[in-house]
Amino acid sequence: MTARSLLFCSDFPLGYHNREAERTLAGFAARGYESTYVEKLGIRSPGPAHVVELARRLRRGAEPPGPDRPFGTCSPRLMPPRHVPPLDAVNRRWLARQLDARVAAPERTILWIRYATPELVPYAERPDWPLVVFEAVDDHLRSPGLPAALRPRLEAAERRMLRRAGLVFAWSEAIAERLRAHHGRVVVAGAGADLDAFAKARASHAPEPRVAGYAGSLDGRFDAALMAETARALPDWRFRLAGPADEPAARLLAPLPNVELLGRVPPESVPGLLAGASVCLMPYRLDAFNDTLFPLKLVESLASGRPTVSTPIRPAREFGDVLRLATGGREFAAAIEASVPDAPGAEARRIARAAPYGWEARLDAMAAAVEEALR
Image (cartoon, rainbow, N blue to C red; front, top):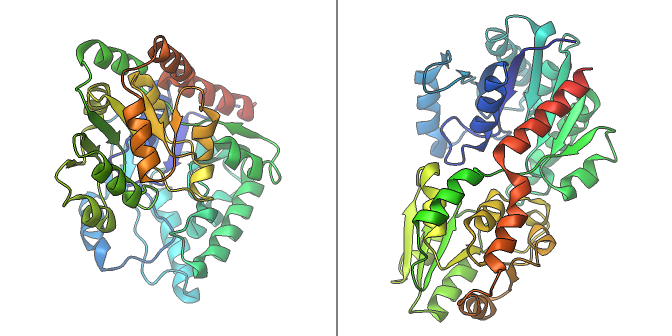
């Protein structure tokens, strides 16, 4: 069966600091798929904090592919409050009309969904799609940020999505284990890194003495209290933390004189930032949700070649032979100091462990799984 269009419903807004979703779709566009990126819908009703985002969506609308972006875009809108029965039915029909405008031939279009938004489920259940792909990047049902009142709706939406999907991608073995109980075609396809960019960064950036680096969101997954305690225990170290910081993390870390909150940085600057550190950091909270992750920064830290200290979340434990694992601020600080000088041969071992997680290898594997599912 031939399907050469792809409607990609992301769990990220367009232009999100982590460009992984956009890069995935660009990879399929380069492989001949006429592609459209649909911005995240999520599950919550918008609140006051979302006013800027809503205004941006109203201005953006839909855009065709261009020289800087090999896929079209769609910024669908829903009327709040969501999940109220009369408006829920209206939103489902309205969403379908907005998406239909981006689909020339449903029978030749793959529908790819990364978040089981309830309003999307009826759209996915249409019989015309030759293939529905469900990509579980995170185990959202275990997310501590999911309101309890919305959990049953998301759980029901996910069950329906799994019944309809012809192919499921899971970002971690932990997620795959749960989904295999409900689906017979679950493929583990986790994070990928631009290994060539990291090789160039290693060649051009010498590690700065007593600098610890982190690149990623400083949000609910990030243990800001652990990081603050570690920074206080190592006053002669500098901690460079790149990525958007939520209010609790900024409140704890901004006052510390040896912590640099760099904010959002361009993705192309991440290899140099990590390669220029003496030690890379993965200070994730120890909880059930983080145990299901396969963080991009795990691959990036290993690809940088630098020693890496992480809390013992499950994916880090699986790489325990090339990471230092620590809990608590004092233990984390001791692990950082013990990482320098580096052990002979350790850098090569870390780079070798990152080697299977290159972007092109990941995209080739995903494209092959899609073609197999179509057959």
